[in-house]
Image (tube, rainbow, N blue to C red):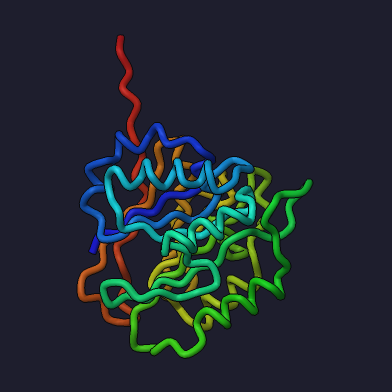
Length: 228
């Protein structure tokens, strides 16, 4: 199964047409939060409907820039992973939305304790033999995918601890725009492709994936043509 990961769309869907070939062949399209730019369910619906032009198999978590009714909209559409685990194609997808408190105020923030409790609740009762993929707007602390420009880490310790304990195959994240990259925590591949508006998206391929086997994960970047 091919998985395409998008993040930090912030209402800007113009690049979707350019990645339509990969979108259309994906078994699932993951959105790691910030569908909107401080928007509500109306703006979120516009984003989801644009993606549905190419693929209707979508799973998402809200980001810190999405108002609470965005999460309610995703739930009504049956595609919300926030605080829950859904099994698709014999793979468990677990999600956590929002972020830690940011400089200034954003609409969807939580504490480390809340993030940890939500993750434990979401995974309760899951058969450990089922391969697990995690979708988190906030990246884990102390990795390439949570670094800001001055080199400081801004991720979540609770999310890091959960990954080290449960070792999902992949953790798709976003939030830290400059933290784009691929890293690992134990056997878990971490990927933050950066904002979609930059022409960046995550690409992963999983086929009959046993627990513990590394997966192929990479960031694809649209190339800008230069004319002389």
